[in-house]
Image (cartoon, rainbow, N blue to C red; front, top):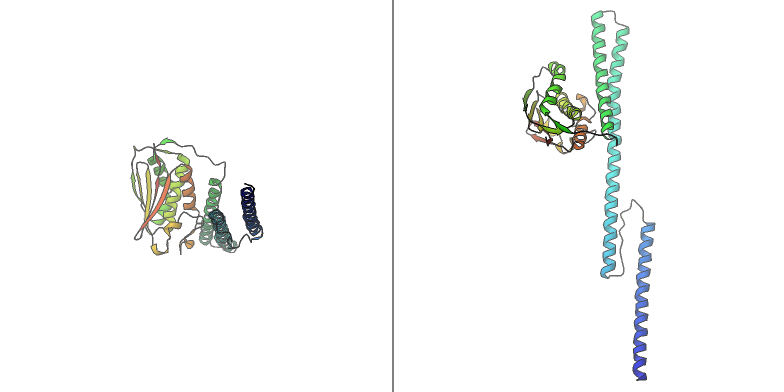
Length: 296
């Protein structure tokens, strides 16, 4: 009996010693993992490994590495966003300075000009360039406004046709200047849920985009709760439709047409504020941008 007890005690002691060794190995490995996390470079790509090949430790290492990959992806995306924003600001600064310099040049010409007709021409050219600056600043203000946390919309049942018609009438001088007559189809009885002022800004930006960058008069269609503006573009290969609603995005060659690349980004933000959607489709040389409002 005493011998059996001794065997039991010995087995228990061995088991305890083994458990202690295992616990020591786990503790040492966990300390090593903690040290790795403390000392790793935040921007580095090093990943956690484990010398204890148990299911639990392997699962822990995989979980930590998944979090590290996600943090790295977020850091890269944030860095790319900062770089794109800085590039956009640089381009915007150039776009503002260029017409300002042009206006200044024309005003200087006015001072030394005796011919009233030439003076009038120089003043008109200066006013046109100052108008370009105002449009750029208006876009920048609108973009900042829609990103303000206090910005609110009040949606109610309304007729989109009324808003679209009013916007088109207000842009008549720009159409006349281009020698264009838009094709317009309106559904006078349709209702939608929208903020009339916000919707007007959306439609104005869409039509202004067509006026600025289009190669022909736009086709404006409002049916039900959907509004689309379609126009022909001169160089469809230069457009990246997936990026049209990014801030500061401008297709190749479009910078010479003016604008800050904010108009469609503002459209996307305003549409989202009303729980509406906006999409762009390029078919051949025809670009169509459609806003889908909630039905009223």
